[in-house]
Length: 113
Length: 107
Image 1 (tube, chains in turn orange, blue):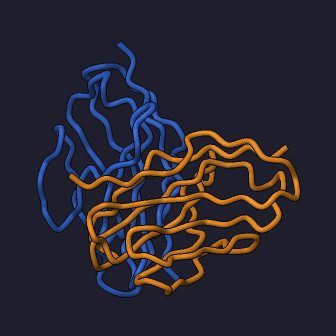
Image 2 (cartoon, chains in turn blue, red; image 1 turned 135 degrees about the vertical axis):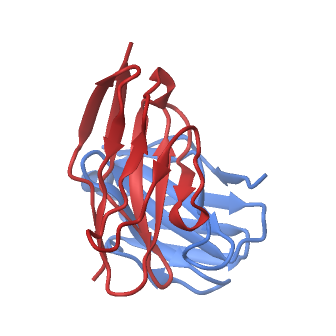
Image 3 (cartoon, chains in turn purple, orange; image 1 turned 180 degrees about the vertical axis):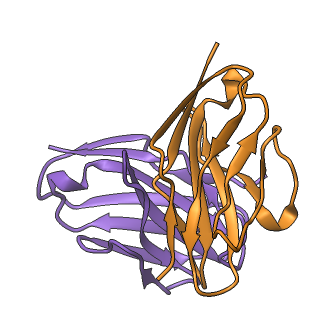
């Protein structure tokens, strides 16, 4: 059974802080993804990675960066958090192709004050 | 550009009533389509994919290329079906999700 874990369920930060969200998957998946989930806007892709040290911008990369130093770990970084980054952040992984099933983590609800 | 449209933000039905959650897509290639579901306090998970043509929890979805639709249907809704449902389209390397439809099934 695929397990995707995220470092925090809830996080509260202040404007301007640097924020790290961590995601780990245990199934040796090639692809990993970061989304934000907002009411009425659905899931929007921030960044994804198809291999170690590789990253690609998604639909809304502004204000975010990512790091993938190891295959199982994909980090999302908010360089200087802003209130409009208050959201639910979901990490996902998939085996190979885009059409492969994506397995999601439980999410991190980030509040930026 | 690929796009997924779910026209209903909320669909409210009574238990035992038929359910249809609408999904339309725009894609120039041969589409692969999915429905993902998120129950309250649970993580988002795959419900079904069109290529497998299977029924999961009584739900089915047929890909209609002529109408570019992939509507999710269930003949008799149950209270436990209450959840957020997302339609998704596979592109070259990512999925594009719709904005989601909240299904509420009342007793």
